[in-house]
Length: 531
Image (cartoon, rainbow, N blue to C red; front, top):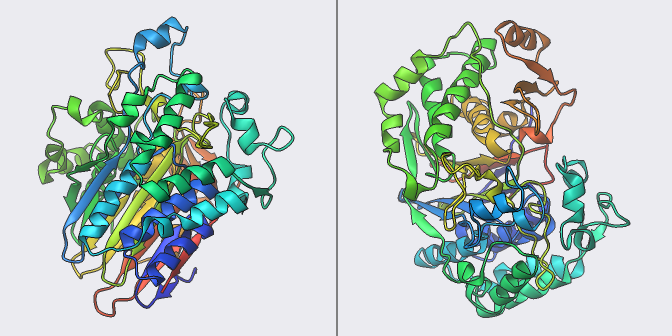
């Protein structure tokens, strides 16, 4: 049994302890949950570069104490020069995951910070920007210890990553990643953050920082132009929601895969399992995930290109039809997508009950690998989810948004509890979220036990032809045998905690005593702190 930390009024959870400390500090100084999250996002963008950074994207869910839900889409579109012809003329059959041609979409995270701070001020926030960015600037300038998970993270296409412009100088020591605990500085990044703190976050796109970013991208022959930065804005969007027997859960709409998380929860409820951690329960989760991903892959794309009403997939009748197709005695054949990804999830609930669930990403570990020399910002590779087939669901086009795995969640229970939860884990995030949510919400596990408990993930390894059911080795051997007998292609990972199965966290505020419980994943470098 793991003990869940309990705090009197407010709490944060983050995959890096320095980010959690930043959030705790802002809350202690009187900041609200949104302000604390912006500060945490800046800090973790510096100290956890393999998972995220200023050159990536973000998605926000915010719940006001009186119940209003805000959803913010801070994902960036493809640059003006990002055409299928350009990539075909360069000899590509698929978009490369590393290097300048992978740095093809605008980074939206900082615009999301700016939009979130507008909301924070509307809710009474008064924290100055230089205080919110202060820790991030200090760590970039004075140094921070390399995280444990950085060294053990799977570096796909590592040779191309190490060869990306600026990567070696920024992140390697003697040609390899440094050991955990080694000190790293980024003076150029500190200067860029200092400029943003002085003149405002819009400078990232339409000021001096934006000019330097655009010039560096042009020199490395990225398809992003300065006008792509200047015209970019993060957007307020309508969240997707689903009513369950005990709660209402909220996720982001496309281009996020939030629909998949809602579908899994909706189907699982209709399967009617009364006991958790049984072979039947896990089989149902796996099969619901397969059906949810099939729907996701058939409809989710840039929201401007969608004609389907997603609410139609979440009606009672639609969910019952999908659940009825699940064979409770045999695994269905599936060509599940690759599950790799590099991102962070963080949660915060303040003393007034303002709740935030936030995800920020570089896509793969270290993103494209490209580090912009004038600002020290490393750029993401989210655009690799585009296809070079013009007839595909997500074809590469200038101005189009790519499919996004980021998937923060919020749940409001009928008894008044408010839960902020999320994980990293690429396309596997809905599976991970379903496991931790059902353990807490349906079967009464504590937050800490729900996050600590062993996990599985159904998907393909990068470059593999067939998906497998990957399991941490803490499952009961009889359960593993039963899943195999049901037809699941079991792959035992031989590790008690596997990074590939997500870095998850949960924060919940209780209405009666106003206390906040919070936990973050033992698979990561973080934790939960509060007041």
